Amino acid sequence: MSRITADLHEAIIAIARDASAAIMEVYAEDFQVEHKADHSPLTRADLAAHRIIADGLSRLTPELPLLSEEGASIPWGTRQDWHAYWLVDPLDGTREFVKRNGEFTVNIALIEGHQPVFGVIMAPVTGTIWHAEAGRRALRRDGENDRELRTRHPAVAPLRVAASRSHRDPRTQAVLDRLPGAQTVPLGSSLKFCHIAEGALDLYPRFGHTCEWDTAAGQCILEAAGGALLAPDGRAFRYNRRESLLNGDFIALGDPSLPWRDWL
Image 1: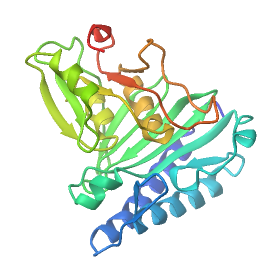
Image 2: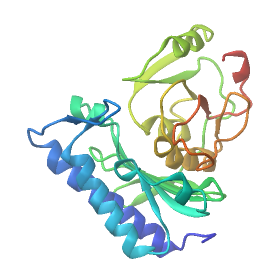
Image 3: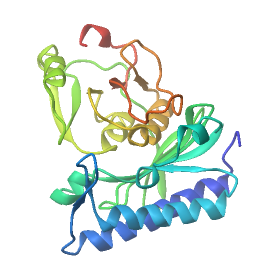
Image 4: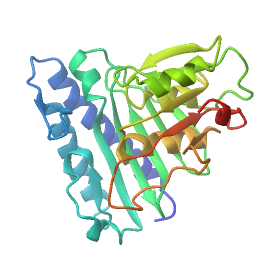
């Protein structure tokens, strides 16, 4: 599948909306929080969104496998033969969901040849949808209206730097210290990629634990808007190339010509 049809594009957005509606039903309640083996939180909203997305994608594209945060126990011996598959985070930002600050998203990406070729991110609280296909436009949808996104080129001082609201660490702080005058914007989930794609932020350095489903949809949208998601050696992020699903360090840039190597 080298190109998403218009009908499939809209069908994936509809699935994201259905998953978001299920998330908001739980959000309105007094929900219980469990913890997975890695101590990350888990709620009924995560599981409900996963079921909706998995069922919907299975009906639309039964030939494509699914890798989801809430169904990640697929052995490398199986995954290593995948050329195309769906990579999903049903509820990105569960910590923000638990805090009830609204900064969580539904992430759906299509991976082909180890790179994201289609991405949808939806913010359930606002209903805003960001979507893109590699090599085409990145768009933001409010209601039924789409507008094209472009990152800020050139990114001039003062730079606006996204920082994880729940995962700040000393190395990130060191980057911020090398950017005097930069405006730091704490933000949760994949919203950071979306805000860079639409020119509201300029960069997002991230060190430490993230997983492949945290970045794939955001990378597709960011790149289609003119930005880049890079490893410290300058290579673009790629997916499903090894047994571990953990990402390495990265920096997301709206303007790839920024002297980002000087800051790491």
